[in-house]
Length: 122
Image 1: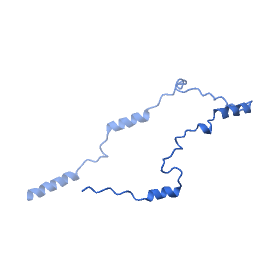
Image 2 (image 1 turned 90 degrees about the horizontal axis):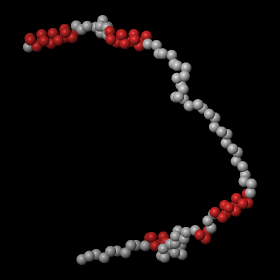
Image 3 (image 1 turned 90 degrees about the vertical axis):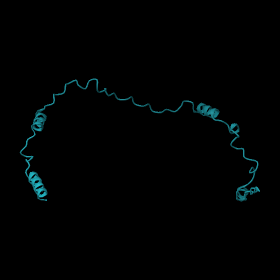
Image 4 (image 1 turned 180 degrees about the vertical axis):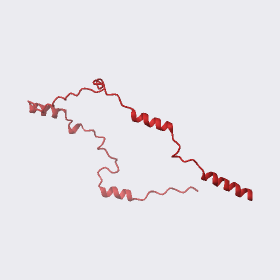
């Protein structure tokens, strides 16, 4: 037990005696900071930007829109290019034979109708 106390006291005394970080100097850090402070960047060359920056040119002014000289011919050409109502596809207009010609009430009644029960297999 006595040996244990001496060992603990020895450790405590060793911990209390340490060198101060302030008294130790880091010569490498001091040299690095001194070199950083003394560094001067070289002056830029006069033509350093040549080749790295494109010359700016103003884009040409847009033209003002103009009316066509022959409006009637333009309208006729548009009417000719527009598809007629008779040529519309009829696939969208087809419906099933059950609901064709029936109203919404008949359709809702069809939906509310009970499903036929499946026959039980014995």
